[in-house]
Amino acid sequence: MERALKAYLAWSAAVLLAAYAVPYAIIRGGGPQLYIFWTLLTLAHYLVTVSYIRGWVRNE
Amino acid sequence: MSDLLAWFSGALLAYLVGGTLLALLARRLGIRSSADYYVAGYRLGGFLSAMTYAATTYSAFMMVGLVGLTYSLGVTSLGFELVYLLSTLTILTALGPTLWRMARERGWVSPSEAVADITGSPLLGIVLAAFYLVALIPYTAAQMKGIGEIFAALGPGYLVGVVVAAFLVMLWIILAGVWSVALTDAFQGIWMIASAAVFIAWLIGFSSSKGVDLAAAFSLTNAAGLGRLWPLAVFVGLTTPWAFFAVTNPQVVQRVFMPKDSTALKRMVYWFGLFGLSYTVVVTLAGIIARGLTAAGAFPSIQLRDAVTPTLLTMAPTVVAAVVYVSIVAAAMSTANSIILSVASSFVRDIYENRLGGNRPIAVSNAIVAALALVAASIAWFRPANIVDLSVLSSTILLPAAPPTIAGALRPGKLRKWALAAFLVGELVVWSAIPLYGTRTNTATVVGIPIPLMSLLLSLAITVAGISIR
Image (tube, rainbow over all chains, first blue to last red; front, top):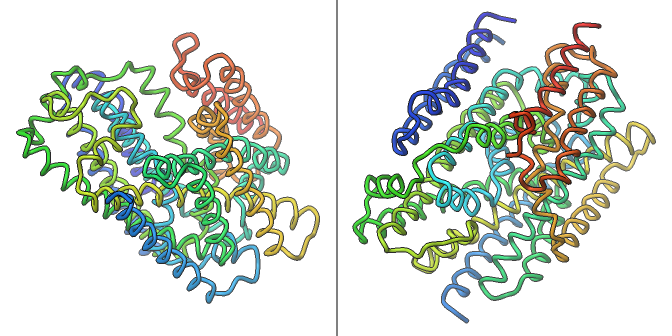
């Protein structure tokens, strides 16, 4: 498995873990904070995904 | 004729004519083989790939079910839907290129054919095709039922809605297979996202006119106790089946085979991610604003979740309501026809072509598509009590296929009988729970573990054992 894919998978695992752990362990109560957290987390994952897959064409 | 019915009829006519013209246009692309019919001959462009992926994934659940879920159960509904998106982006990015490349090299057409090939278990492919029927035909019937309910609420009647849905599913598939489905999906996807934007713009304006801006809506929702998280077991139980949707549901697995090159595959992920994030945020915001309006006394308190959007639409300008209603029809249609096409591919490809050596795949495909559409419409017509139950559980029923499929993509052909064992043991857990818990299967726990997670872990354990032993 190439290094970039390993790094992407590690990032994704961290993001998915954060999607469960941060609300339940840290934020707990607040509605708007939860909404902002999940939205920004998904946006960040989307942006990292977009930058990672740019490499697909370069690697062909 | 009421104003709303007149506007709805006009918008529906525009939708039907636009979709049918696109489906007719798709006929020019030429369908000669089952690969053309089901996977567009591996020649689909990036934008069409993305829009058909999005329109297939996002059903009428979003604009009706998720708005109501957020209204009733609060902000955690956003987390529930975004965990699906986070996971799907990861799966598409990490496994997409492998599945896409292998589909070309090995000539995969149906998703069950792909699973049989990568796991080395032809029997799993056949068993999976049967489970697609059990899990997804009720899901398709539920989409048709949704269209019937809209027609019933607006005047033409429930059965008219079901008949229109079944006729369109057949017409838009039979005209040019997945080519017409992809083109109409793109049209429907654009309609869905554009109408969601119009809907939220109107709702924000309407809400502000009642003195409830976005910040106030959040604060009122919080004060109503809906800012709180769902119990962790409920959140895990509900998100687990959806987190693996991209590798378990045939209608989306098959879409990874279709992009014409790696640039198209890349664009599929770009546009799908953007569509998914925008649509989810808009839909959940609508639920929060509606709840804020209720707390402020400007909107009635709704007990039935699925009634939130229709009640909001009674307050919207008729043109906005008509366009949004048609977008719900579009969301249901684009999901229904993709499922029918995908389920049909398992029978035509795996059984008719590969096992029986049949050489008239297009004619047989058209017959099977028509038969499946009629079965789904008949189920919707008679409205048996358990179709909604089964449709809610569709992803849970298919969940045990996730570990062997992912392992097979990473190490093709190694698992063999272990793949079938992993799937069947997971199914044993699911089907033992369904008679006991019904629609609550996803949220029920055994020794503190949500049932979907238990099913997944057992399937995973057998998959890992299979890899280790071989």
